[in-house]
Amino acid sequence: MQITLTNPLDMHIHFRDHAMLEVVAPYTTKSFVAGVVMPNLNPPITSVALAKSYMRRIQSIDDCFFPICPLYFHEDLSFAELQQCVDSGLRILKLYPKGATTGSEKGVSQILSKKTLEICSIAQDLGMILSIHGESNGFMLDREYEFGEIFASLAHAFPHLKIIIEHMSDHRSIPLLREFKNIYATLTLHHITLDLDSVVGGKLEPHHFCKPTLKTPTDKQKLLELALSADPKVSFGSDSAPHTLESKRNGAAGIFSAPCLLEQLTELFETHNALSNLQAFVSDNAMRNYCLSQWLPPLRQKQITLTKSPQTIPESIDSKDSKEDVIIPFHAGKTIKWSIKQICEV
Image (cartoon, rainbow, N blue to C red; front, top):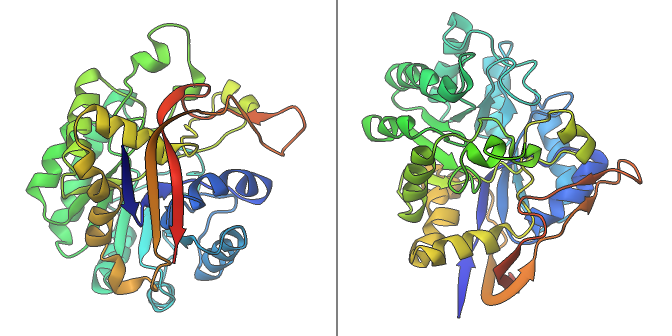
């Protein structure tokens, strides 16, 4: 038994930079043709020049992979810089509420401020896409739900601005996809397969701690149903976020899911008799929802053939940060039923 996927896309990835970038990027670049690489570095990617430099560093590792680098949304963005962004082929703005997650210290304090709305208006006029880490400062299990009012306000105010709910984690956000034509979402593997019990239901599991946090069994099930049906409003974004073991022990939020990612998705969809929808979930929906063919350069075509052959996810990966420190991947040590048989690049 086998399946071939054409041009898989990961619409939300954390590659980090420097030594960490060299370690983690190949796990994604070998099996995905392109992906949206997050700009919350230190310092963040706040200019076109920084974005282009980061993209070059990624492509020096694998020039068959195309990194799509959003611009980090900040209140000093000008019309000229946003125009330069579009002219340079960069169409995505990534908005982080200040303090909401890793690398959001320079995020936006007041999402609906006059200046923020002015930037959103310019972004709409220029045909840009606004991707948002949508969380309030409230109780952790309600943060995304509470942010829904802001998603609705922005969608009302800017009906021609495409807005992405990044890593949707709360089933109460789903009605926003139905109510507003311009709201879309990305879904991660961990939010559609795990719930809060996976973090604190037994022995504390720091490698399942992420933001937005895993939530209830109902949230997991409803989001899984969206993914398995390849709902046209959602696309795959792993939110793979590597941290060293030392950082995880000190409370860092993030799940490094990149190793064996397509294989795990294939196993999940096969288990639920939904393999026929996997192509749409990992590629076709994103191509359409982000209008990628309209503003990306022609991508190197990539076909990934997976076969029913077991393999084991690595227990740990050398981080190169130190001889002792490692990165623990999602489902470390687990044997899965699928493997990549062949990668064809054109």
